[in-house]
Length: 173
Image (tube, rainbow, N blue to C red; front, side):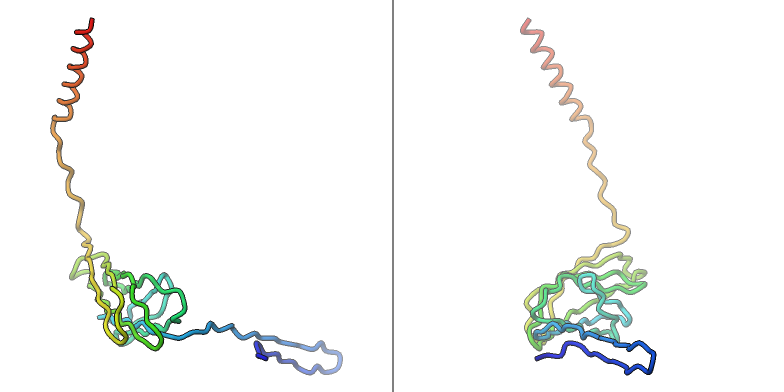
């Protein structure tokens, strides 16, 4: 037998309606717990896992407990005003009582002139060890290269085929 909620009642005085309040306890999801430890180079950065806000770094760290039986997170995003947005794929999943460390380096926008940093956290990272991170920087002022000029060669080839076609038609007559 399990108690799922709590009920309280107040005994009414004469000519009053009794008041009954029922409160249900949230159903807890069971399972073992592991932890992601996000280590950033700045304090006060917002940490998000798969668009689910997890908290703000304090002393450049944030511990994020997760159920080992739950759906694994895929993407971590870390952001703070004045710094490039950091986004990385998460491929390491902590096991029971394990910690997977994710090192995050936010680049100042003025110093690096970057708009976004993307990375992959490679798996698996053994318990209590640091996950490997490879990063790719995208710079703000970068533009696509200019298309190569083809000159008049396509036009000349088209004209040559036209002349050959006209001559072949005239020679058949």
